Image (cartoon, one colour):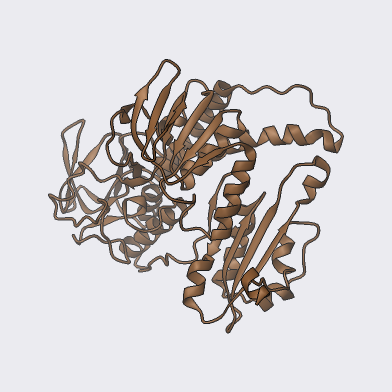
Length: 460
């Protein structure tokens, strides 16, 4: 019998925790993972995966509308929300089973109850009351929806957690927030026929993205009929016979059958006992870690959204894998949190890798900008009023590409491949030397030749 019950105890069976557990067990470590809800975490159960399935469903309306332009007669189309949710649930159950199977194959013990930290090497299991010991403890509890400052009536709102399991589709909804989740759900609901309003505290949605993308996304959503209310927040929410009414900070009200808050997420550390174990927590409750995911306590580590790094599933997976390599594989390595491709699965889709213009202009003496805006080939027969937008940001002195941005169908797929080029240090000359794949939208990234000149510069 060793000094501890386990070599590694993982709290949280999401993407990062599961990867860390599997790889560590593969190195011969005795591993247990505790999960109080479902195996798979936010991404698989109530995040990326079910969200993308709903996005696919919402886009079928466009396909039916476009069909006549290509000679198809599809008749009257109807949509059934419960059928979609049932199909989504079936797929999520399949994925959860796959996660369980993969953990079992590597010998990881799954403990289905809440676990809290009792000390540097001790974990308490809530249901059984049992205390177990581990040489290392990994916190991988992810994040949870944040409801902002408490306001009267906040108990009436739903978050992304509840949106995935609504018994029926509302006739109208107000989505509070302006980031990934808010913009994606606004698009989903709107394209499924729900009267949709997006309310955001800032002056423009999608803070942090390139300004051109933000402006064009706003234009596209407005054209689709999504109402966007900026520079406002809810001050209170009242229940009505028809649903709810929200009172705004700027005066006036917004009424809807449902009100959804997607104003951000916070690390899920409350009640874990981390402070009692001496673990330093950051400004929003996140576990403060070094480049090897180690906390202020040598035996306690953290990966994924529970830290204050990039809150993206692939990042959590990489961090979990690197932790296992470092601590159990004798292969120390850290993860670079740079050049991370990211996408907003709105319709139109938006994706980026590298720097937005406002940051690129601060980091180089001379910035060359290339832009392309065009009607996609599919829209020529469908008649849809749609534009694709692409943008390259280039260091004018080194010719190195600093940012690659796109708004349009397939943006996520295209930017994933562009991310490889940027990580290899590609220059504009490298893109120019690449033969175009025709006819595609992606070919525009290797055929843009003329630098964009701001109207004021052109006039001068």
